[in-house]
Image: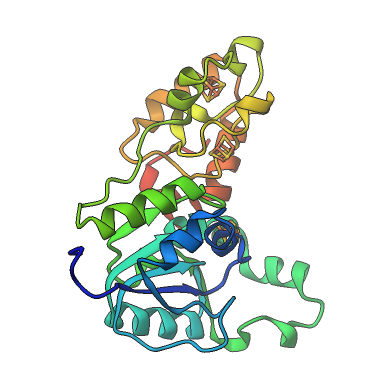
Length: 259
Ligand code: SF4
Ligand code: SF4
Ligand code: SF4
């Protein structure tokens, strides 16, 4: 995007999700106001009364596809957007709702809804899925929710007309930079080596193992890393559970052996 060009039209939309990823953007400290000077926030239904249709230069989408309505909205935004950004682990991986993919559908729905006529989305429910399983996505930023710094960095790059580089290092890298003592050395559980960072090692910094909310690290050698984690006393069952929880509908792509 050229500096001399008109302000880019930005949209922040949501499908099935908890709104936590949008809140990160709206609470991005004083920076959002600064940013609003440089962009035209034309659609943000969570905070704006008037919301415009596209075309959008940048469209953030929070949430996963869980019903027909989600799918129609998503396709509509895709058609109208130059850059479509999957914002948060629901959008990038299907996340927690994707757990349904590993269970019997009837059992899950009966556990949640006594009366299935109240089922959200009714008969139009779809297999919970990441948005890239339905439309082309230009950039994916995982995190439940992602960090505000990732939003600012992405917007900064787009405004400077620079190809954004999405951070793709394990949590361990940020842990090491912060000189945090490794929890594995103390016999604690931590999935940091196979999880994408970007959170500044938030959990290990408070002596809590990474459970994987940023989703799996792209191109990690999962089998090798899982063997190493097992050697450190982290059970494969726990690793599988955590990966299924956050990798959701993308879990099978990891090629992890479920024993
Ligand atoms: S990724 Fe997490 S914070 Fe974002 S919408 Fe999904 S559940 Fe909420
Ligand atoms: S505490 Fe976790 S994230 Fe930090 S270095 Fe150890 S394994 Fe990696
Ligand atoms: S340390 Fe792991 S669980 Fe904690 S915020 Fe970072 S990615 Fe999420």
